[in-house]
Amino acid sequence: MKTLLIGNFGSGNRGDELILLAALEKYGAEKVVVMTANPNFSRTFCECEFETISPLPTGFRSILQWYCNKKYRESWHNLSGNIKQIIFPGGGLFAIKTKAVWIWFTIVLQLRRIFPYISPIFENQGIESINIIANWMIRKSFAQCQYLSTRDDDSAIVLQNWDFAAEKKRDLVQEWLEKTPKKWQKNRGKYVIINAIFPINAILLQKIKKRFLDQKIIFLAMNDIDKNFSDDLPVFVPKTASELLTFVSDAGGMIGERFHALVLGLSLLGKEKTWLLRKPYAKKVQIFAQKEKIKKV
View (cartoon, rainbow, N blue to C red):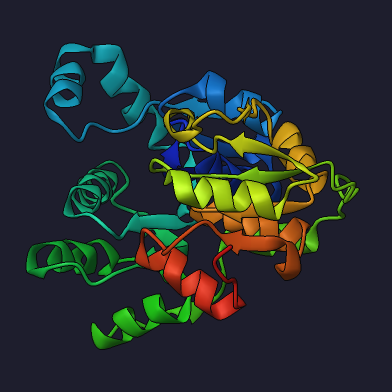
């Protein structure tokens, strides 16, 4: 009997893969089945082998594939007798956009149908009150869970307002990094890292270059699409977790925009060497920056 891990895995976002890596170390790679859109990407990044299964259908094309591909359907139905618990190990799945909430709501409904005897566990969740429809779907998703924890106080408050009991924790990656020996920690200060998910204003970029005049500036792509916003900077795209963690540990600073870029900077380099690139693009980043007192560069 294995644990089924559910999350936004295999989508190309290294932050989500770090959540998976932390969950694999927590539950044991040999004892889990991971729902991932790209098994090779997830296994390569996490640098270990584990059993995988394709994501449940959430859109027109995947639903069509579900009904046209008997092997796809059977892979899930055959799994039903081999799973002892279902865990969503973290992330902001139920936040920011109604579309994202819809995706995970439909997945929860399908899990309840395939595994009627298992109530899911939601750990280290980032949750936002979005709108009436999204909020209804979030409440329905959590209605029959056996355990629920959040990664920040604001998420806990949202759930309390909906009469859900939830344990307050932190982001799973942050918890994992603090408990893990810093085998990558070198702090050589060879370069300063920038991560962005939108184009960087030319004036802001010039300001950063002047501030770190004596250090090379390298752009970190936490997601492959981030490369589009690297401007003229050299780009580093990590293939494995070890590459990513070593790259950040060797830096002299992290100027981040994505949530987990800031988590890596804070955990591996410290508060004095971690900055926000600009005003947070999402509430989860704003909450994290305020709590940890991370300032704009």
